[in-house]
Image 1 (cartoon, rainbow, N blue to C red):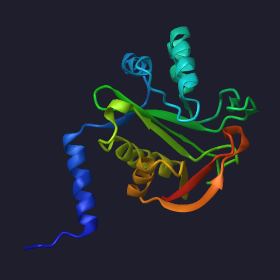
Image 2 (cartoon, rainbow, N blue to C red):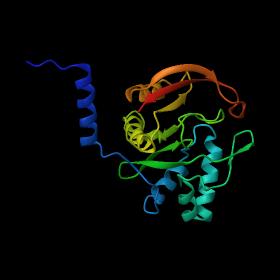
Image 3 (cartoon, rainbow, N blue to C red):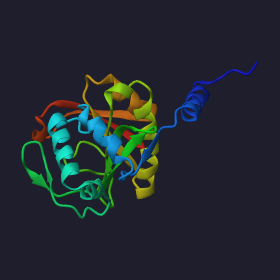
Length: 206
């Protein structure tokens, strides 16, 4: 009987996941917006740093102008205005875009940002990629699959690698990153804008 190797097992698991769980990452559009808004109204936040404040701001933006809200989530040329950090500082916007994790309804969000011509990031930017899955669909592999698909987007930009940060006490996120080939490169203290907390930096070669 043939023996399965660890790599074969991982590939088989990914194939089975894609076959039986129709999860994808989609460009935010009006057709997806009611489901996304419903997730926000249930108390979920797509921002792991600003949490409830970000949820309130997004609901207000959707109510004010849903088309403008969607356009702001897809800005690969950094045409939008400056970004306000948690400490109130304003910094230039980086090229980037957000995709929604989708299985027939909104299941989370994943974003990607970068600096043109380099894989380096400014000190105030906590990684190239950030993601958040709605609480009622966690532990199903959604974040792992969403990150795998977003890495294809990063390769298309031409980056040599991406970096993702996670708190030391968040083993679920560590598992997602490691499953996609991530390697821990350092412990560091986040920019003062985020409170200066200790964090872990992972790198995924593309």
